[in-house]
Image (cartoon, rainbow, N blue to C red; front, side, top):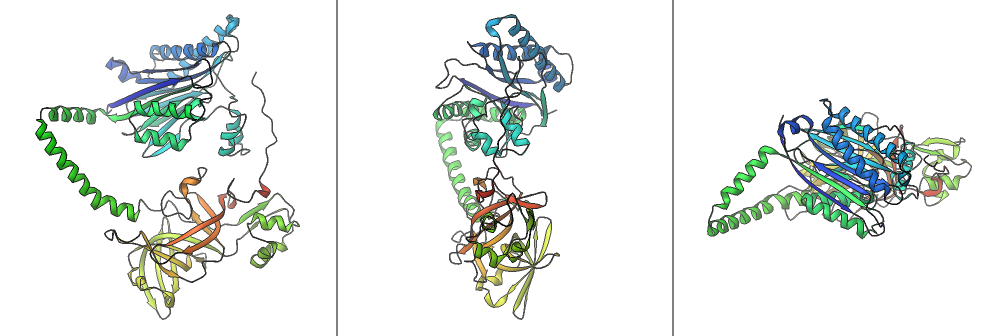
Length: 535
C-alpha cells in the first residue's frame, strides 16, 4: 500500500451574527506508525445546535467521543468502526442531554472522514458536507439530511430552488436528539492530488461551489481555509463557518521534493540566480510553444456523447389553450407556431410529445473520406459512439473547404434518416495548432439560413463542443443530452459560428423537458408542501 503525504488545514469562525461558535473540528494523524497503518487519519467537523451554548457542548462531546471510540475499536473494518463510534457518541450525548435540563434539546451534525492508505471513508449525519476536488472538479460526497434535500430527491424542488429556500436549514437527522441514529457511510479510492473538504453549512450555504473550488485550486490548504472563512463572512457571516482541508500527495514524491530542496539549499546565491533565470526563460519558451496554441485552439478533449433526437414533452395545460402552448415552445406568437408545427393543432390530449420544427444536430468530430462529386460533397464523421454520413452543397463551399479532409469540424445539420445521414447547414473547421494568428474555428460552409430560429440537439460540455456556455448551467452534467432553441450567427469566416439559446430543455425519460429557469415559465410547477417539524 503506497503511503500518502497529507497536508491538513482547519479553520473555525463565529461569523458576524452569532454570539457563540458552536462548531467544533478536530484532525488526528497518529504519530504511531502501527496505529496509522491500521486505523488511518481521522478528520471531524460538527455543527452544534441548542440554546445557551448547548450546541457547542454537543458538537465538542460528539467529536471527542467519536475520536476516542474509533481508535479504541479493535476491528479492522474501518467503515463499521467509524459507524459504531458515531452511534456510541450519539447515545452518550443523548443521555447527557436527558440528565441535564440546561442541555435539553441539544444536538449536532457531524461529517467524519478516515484516510487509510489510498482509501477514503466518509460518514455523515445532518447537513455538514464532504467534498472531493479531483482534476479541477468539485463533487459533493455526502447527501444532506435536510427537508429541502428530500424535496430535491423527490423532484419537487431543483437544486437552485433548494439553495434559496427559506427552509434550507431545517435538518431531518442529527446526533444527540434521539437515542438511536442512522449513519450514512461512503467509501472511495483516493488519487494523488485529491483534495478533501469537510465543512459546516455556515460555509457551504454562504459561498458558491465555484468559488470554493477556485479557492482550493489556487491556494495551499492553510491559505485556502482562511480565504473560505473570509468569503463566508463577506457574504454576511450569518452562521458559524468551520472547515477541514486535506490535500493528498505521495509520501515518496514528498520525500523526493524535500531532498531536492535540501540539495538546492547548498548552492551559492549566484548559482541559484543563474539557474532561476534559466528556468524562467525555459518556462517562457514553454508558454510560447505550448500555451499559446492550446489556448487558441482550445481542444481540451472530445465530446462526452453524441446528441440524441427525441420529442419535447408538453403537459400541464389544456391543448385548447394554444397561446400557452406557443409560449411553452418559445414561439413569438401563435401564428408562428401554426406555421412551423401544424401538428400541434391536431392533438387533443392534455399531455403529448411534439417533434420540434427546424430541428437539427450539432456534431463535432474528425472528417474522414472527404469527396466531392458533381454538386454534392460527402464525408464520414465520428462523434463519441456514433458515425454520421454528412452531405452538403459543393456550390456553397468556401476556399478553405478543400482542407476539410482529416480535420476536426463542428457541424450543424438536419438528420435525414435514422441510419445517421445528415444534411449540413453550417460547418466550422479547427485552425491548425501552429497557426497562432488564426482563431480556433473558421467557418467554411453556410447555407445562408442562419437568421431563422432553430431547434438544436446537442450535448452539454465544458469545452467548445457545446452550443451553450456550460458554466452558466450548474444543474447540467457533462455529457447530458440537451435541446436548445435559438439562432445561429456567423460573423465572418474567421470567427466561426455561434449560437444564442433562447430556451433550453434536457432529456428525461425519452423526452425533452424544460430546464428550470432557462425556459418559458408559464408552465413551471409550484411547490405547496409544508415542512414538518422535527420532534
